[in-house]
Structure formats: C-alpha cells, structure tokens
Amino acid sequence: RWLVHCQAFDPSGIKSGAPFVMMSSATYSKIDAHHIAAFSPTVIRKLLRTQLGFKGVVISDDLGQAVAVRSFTPGQRAVNFLSAGGNMILTVKASTVPAMTQAVSARMKTDAAFRADVADSVHRILAAKSAAGLLSCG
Image (tube, rainbow, N blue to C red; front, side, top):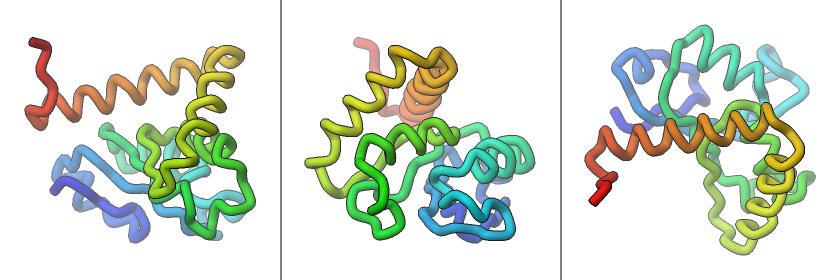
C-alpha cells in the first residue's frame, strides 16, 4: 500500500490510495522515447497525474549512481526530475546532494513555474508525512 513502482504502470496501487509512487529510470519508448520516465513530463504529469489520477508523492529512483542518468550532472538530474513533475529526489550517493541542492535553488530564483512545482512538492511531502503521523507541530 505504501509504494507502487510505476515501472509496470499497474493502477491498482494508485486506485487503492497509495501515497507514494517510485518513478523508474527506464525509458518507455511507446510513451516517451526521448526521456527516461523520471525526466518525462509525459509519464509523470500526463500519464500518472492526469490519466491515472495519482495525487500523492512521486519519488525518483536513484539519481546518484544509476547508469541511466550518468550522462547528466547531478544538478541536471534534480532539476529534470522536479521539472517533469517529480516531488522527492532519492540518491544513494550523498556527495551529489550539494550540487543537486544548488541547481534546484538557482533554478527557483529564475523560474516561477519551477518554484511553484517545488512548493507543490513540499506540500505533497508534508501532507503525506502528516497523514502517516510523522509530522508534529509541537
């Protein structure tokens, strides 16, 4: 119930109210041949959010060391994922976090739509934490 892997595009987890989906770094050539799923607005915004109606948090698969993202800088990986509609970035390589953070901060300063996407991500993540009893305000 907590995690639905979007690789199979099985909507049963979404229909049951799963609060999180992990976005694969695979390329689905019949859906978006030009982007891996984690960087694809077609997969995240159109298929997952609009067609399947997913309202929860979209988590990336590893964006630190995955072979599928090696051709991108860590900063590009973070910005591309968030720009595509993702919400929470996962990296198994902690050394990539400063570059990712810097790139996201820089893009937020110059792009109002991106800034709104990041704010939406923060709200989705906090709502999921609250619903799970993991957020306290006191």
